[in-house]
Image (cartoon, rainbow, N blue to C red; front, side, top):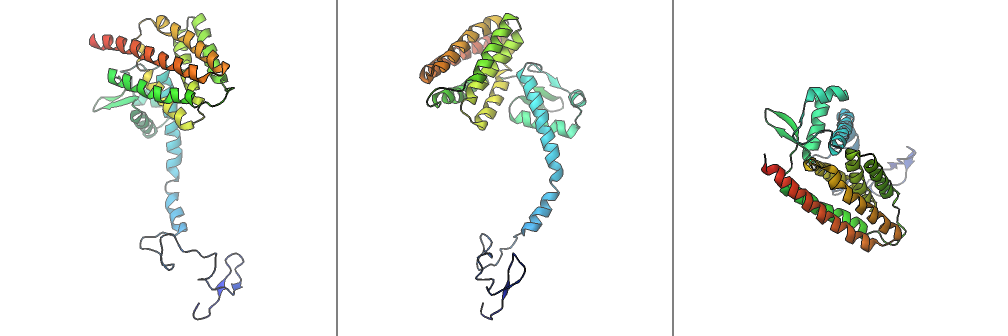
Length: 273
């Protein structure tokens, strides 16, 4: 420093022989020149004070996300069929949440294409189109097949896949067709989870929940699900043998057949409306 003034040690508070300009503990603020802060720069203490006003949003957002999780799962399970109106009073009262929290949850699920808001009518479970269905399967191929393709060297950790297959077989024996549908969805979630990617898991969860909006068109769920249950078992056994290439081939064929069957049934259903 030109005038020889001494600085202060910032750790001890004692005088220091180092000038502030030479101290390694006095870096310039990012984007500053010569230690001069740009216009509009807020010190860290000011930023923290500004965030305190947002603290209340954390609890509300967390609750809204949890409500969205519950409703998403219910939609995926078929509890709310497509076209169902979700009453704010009924749903909010059942879950014990405020109207604002519920509306935020509705907004999240509308963004995921599971709900739709109709002006002056309310919020409804979305009715998908055939184009939607085809796009869902396009995404499924990209995600599911890639998860299997990227498995690497065997053996593979397929306990979740096996659990879904066993649950489906148990549901079929009990003639519990809704449970079989849920087990089938969990099978595909488990396939994607083999990638070890939380983002892929989250994406697949939303995609499969949207797909669940289509399954109601199958008049005979036993005839629809039973053949795929056998194919789920086949894919599991091939994965257990360590043949990821064959598993991907079986999965791609599976998705092609499932898409064609659902699309045909959905077209017939929509044409009768």
